[in-house]
Length: 343
Ligand SMILES: *Cc1c(COP(=O)(O)O)cnc(C)c1O
Image 1 (cartoon, protein in one colour):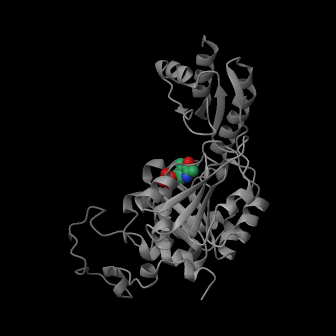
Image 2 (cartoon, protein in one colour):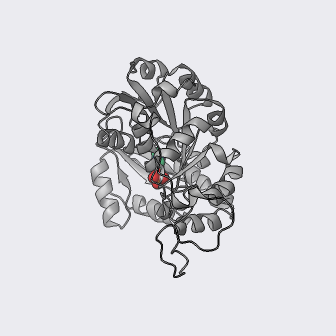
């Protein structure tokens, strides 16, 4: 029994997972009369591999981890939902999250009837470890941290995140959706060595596959086994896996470098506008800015055909807009629009 076994919901610990037709044989078979599929070949008439072995074998070395420590989901959103379903008893357990952060943690908690304890980040979006741990009680099964954080853009130090992991008695999830844009290192290797750490990553941002819906979770063998057991058997389609296989052959270094270069460019230009009060340092592919009148600027940009994210109604983000870094020409269009903005 490991240090986390007692955190698993009893019904999940006792679960007999669905056994797919193709799991029940070994060896080479030429005639498939087992799964009630159509025999007429069109490239997609057979069920996809529920274990996603080929795609995992492709991704794992790129991430520097064994394939057995990797879970693939229908977006990170699936992994977030699974964490609640595996560890939290509805109506009884709770989750600690930081705020402002990614909205899906709270939504997935609400769907699963799990109470959320929100810990406000400091004024500059720093994370107070003591406040976070003080918010936990014996029913706090999971904690979600996001680094680099959406929408603030800042990443937390490795030391701080690992210290929280060591001291927290539940499952710590660190969402690294934007890690490719950050100079602070990923914790994936740590997640394969610890028993209570789950790292979330995604193909949706730097890897440019938001439309394919592929999210990653990296964790201990025990947690990956639980996630694989609870997921829908065929949670990734064959079409998505094939496309991802081919996209993963190509390096994203050039694109990531360009986005980081553009982020630095915008970061130095944006403070020059009189209506921009604050440009928050970012480790991601977006920048949060505080402006005089966020609603007015948001509407103005919309009229110019540029949509940004208005975060001004979120506590801690008053007056703030979140700007995604686009192509260099798109960023020029944004700056051009800002040049012509009259308050
Ligand atoms: C965009 C984003 C994701 C990605 O979610 P997918 O379901 O994988 O597309 C995850 N976490 C954060 C914080 C994000 O901003």
